[in-house]
Amino acid sequence: MSIATAIAIYFIIWWVMLFAVLPWGVRSQDESGTVSPGTDPGAPVSPRVWRTLIATTISACMVFALFFIVYSYRLVTIESLAALLGR
Image (spheres, one colour):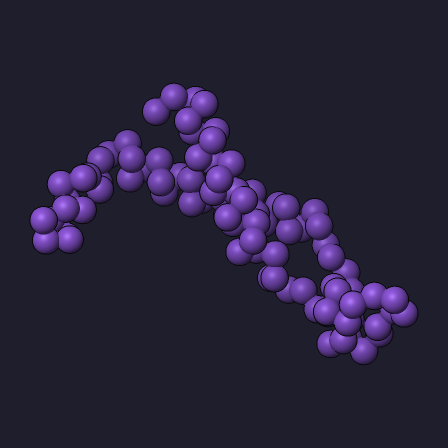
């Protein structure tokens, strides 16, 4: 796998993990009882962007490491997927 391919795959995994991590620990204004005028009640009280980005990066690294191990050691092949599907 080339460096460019690895970076592209990591970038895609990072984006998917971002959307998985976004709701972790978020309290809405409605839940906390302090809705600011002119805002949506579902808006977060404290977005904690840096914590979310760090959690996303750590989880994306773990998922990419798992992908890289499976790819490097050929743990899943086209033949094994075909056998799994009965072809």
